[in-house]
Image 1 (tube, rainbow, N blue to C red):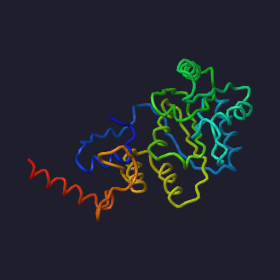
Image 2 (cartoon, rainbow, N blue to C red; image 1 turned 45 degrees about the vertical axis):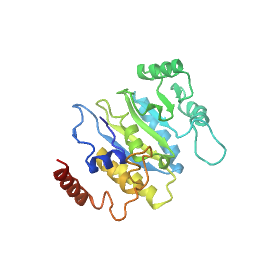
Image 3 (tube, rainbow, N blue to C red; image 1 turned 90 degrees about the horizontal axis):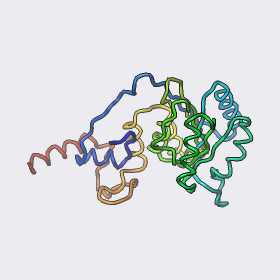
Image 4 (tube, rainbow, N blue to C red; image 1 turned 30 degrees about the horizontal axis):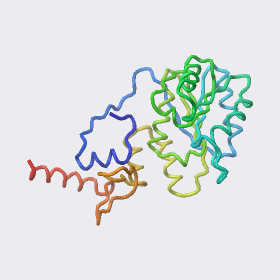
Length: 243
């Protein structure tokens, strides 16, 4: 079971190694989640928007791709941004969560956020699964172009879990055409299979019998997305021969 198909999942389904059943409706009473892409220069306005939502009683996530700054590029890290965000949102309490914390510390931070004692959670992708805080309606993802589409979709699933509207704001420095297209997909749809199909087209399905979850297979002519009807016909025909 998956809430977020990855390209390899979709590739295996096209090969016929997986049967697919789709639940296309959200649970009743869920609020709509809207997704926007913004450049770094818009960050002051994003902070102000989040402040307004906090004043309304909501909570927010800020997600970063790294725990610490490596000094090799300008990709932001969660530990480096925590103090700035804590100052920006004062007096609202801000928490820090990442994979290098001890288990008991992570559980304590998450419990405080779920209880509403923390209004903002500054985190890495450790929050992408198993986190259910209906009052958290805003997610800001910095350096969003560094995340896979399936991962962004999984992160988006952490908001909009209650009756209030949700907002996902992707802060990006997307400079290539592929980066721009990928993030536009997130704004256009919340359909996990459509997102996975676009990820499949851009990144490839990876190895069917290996570990890699991206990359193009060594086909001589076939394209899993462009030739999907042909692949499905070949799969059906092969089954008639093998019984």
